[in-house]
Length: 469
Image (cartoon, rainbow, N blue to C red):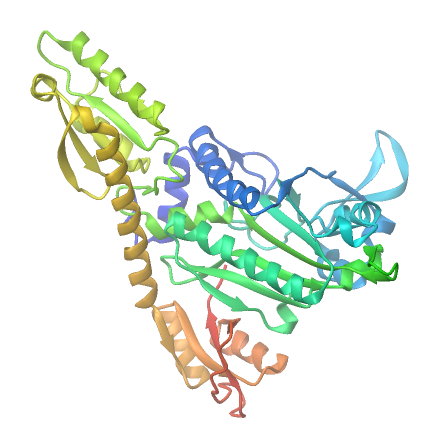
């Protein structure tokens, strides 16, 4: 592998190929093929997220891919925000369609007309649904696997409420779910309220989860939007209250894409390859038999017994029976990010012991009878270390700058999040972007720290800026 910290971009591309995450050779730019190991890891991420949403009262749905142009065009701000990225279907065979069909770039315009049909009274509220699928955008920027593409695999949640207060509470719940999700993945984040000009098209405001990658750039890995009544008024999402009065509903939406896996790969990786937290790893444990002597058959049977025992307890486990030296097997599974391997040789077989070795080098000998308890404890401990290490690294990359020159110097040499003052004018934001080559990411929620604008010197508020993908 390339050296992780000093050549992150090359390391990242090499890992995606060498570890069987995706194949970018498909002949449509920005539409990679997910290979088995990579898709298993991605689906493990989304199963975790889907379970959290299900337990919080969201129901899973599946909506169509295509949107009639008149339906898509109803919400002016929304289509203005996505108009340049929309892929259109104009023909069925050789026949030109009577009306163009947009391939969903996001699903508000697909779902909300149906919400207007489903919701009639206050008894139908709240409505909370989510779906996992692909959306499509004609992104003209340089594509980067799992980070920027034209086919985006994601989970999106959409909710409808009777009041603004309930809508605000739902935003808070969405944030809570996403915090829990990224904590389980060991990925630290900043939750920032985006500037008005960078708010999701059609939303009252947007909150974004930003993760710091090893090259010092920031990756947006999740968003939560308060839509207010903007879409409800366009798509007639309304309800009759107890007195029979018609009211427009309030809505939220939030989403996480395949970038969650990109963040896991980037935040935790090292010179050996992938490092995967237990929630994500396709195999959480690999049992490696040390095969020599006359008892190979007995050893293999014992390895399979250990595997069956762990799988019965919910641990994803493999046995590596290949005719290779143990060291080669250890290297192979370490490069794929497997959190734990178990060594079992003649000595361990005779003593009814197992040698447990974590991906970061923690080693322990355990009784075979307590295999599950010891494995679970080591997986949990590894996950905690990964999160602690990542948090420490992010904290070390929080800086501040009082002028554009200093901001440019910091993002060029060190990257990371840089706190600056901003007067909230778009002109000053553009100056920061052009002169410092940094992007204003947003305000920390519930914080009102005063700082002079780095661009014009006028009174302003503290915001975070960074280089971004």
